[in-house]
Length: 333
Image (cartoon, rainbow, N blue to C red; front, side, top):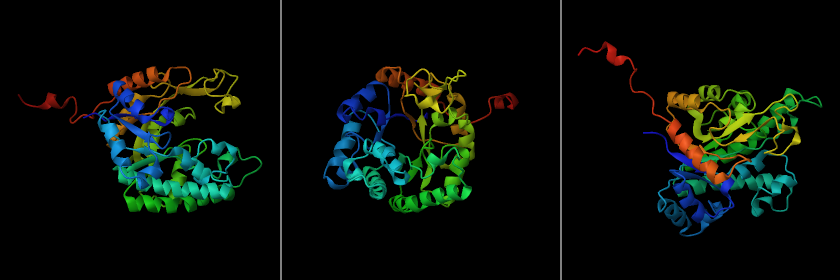
């Protein structure tokens, strides 16, 4: 049967889950990818508070929803990043602490380990998220940057993430990393480099999100074909390139939603991502997990957008063929 269509709740963290759950069902969703933000999924409460897991589960089931993945993108970002004041806005207070960069990174790593334990307790075997990056700020290679310095950054990523992935292995949970600018990997080559430095361990795979590949002029289908066994989760998210000879894909330090940007996010189906070919590629690799709508469009009401995105994805998805369309021509009557 077609894959479940779920809603990633990261962009809805301002709305209590008791209000979001019935709204998501009314919009047509089969489930939620619960973000560790707002009150959607609180790692510390999941591990320490009696009855918390059961209450969150009941809140979903009462609204006919399931959960196949937990997201902790924001904390994962702090594991490898050079920490600055911007991180304070995205991190729980107990992870930020006194803001000392190394302390923040270590607390973020412990929180990601705890997330794996909480996900297992919740009955979910995929955690989606970011890794952060020690070398993203060295993207342009000026001042001159050697490959040795880049390799040292990848080695730091492995040193910080392998102990986290050890806990994921212990819990039987997989980390689905979202390849994304500002992370250790942002395209096919860097994804392969990240996979290699951690020894291709099975706990580490990908949360496939075509939008961030598309605006960089990377073919999302080629990413699926390069890592067919490591697509652990899928985001349905769209983007548009609006290059007009004045702007480029580096976005000109303009905020999301500014029409002068060289690219921006769009409601699913209203951008340039070829989701038809993505569904066909997912069918070829046998992906049976959810299609999780990550809705972002600065120019559209989010309820309108999330509803139409659900309808678009459900209409687009289809099962692979069990036989060739012309097989019957050769059969005897």
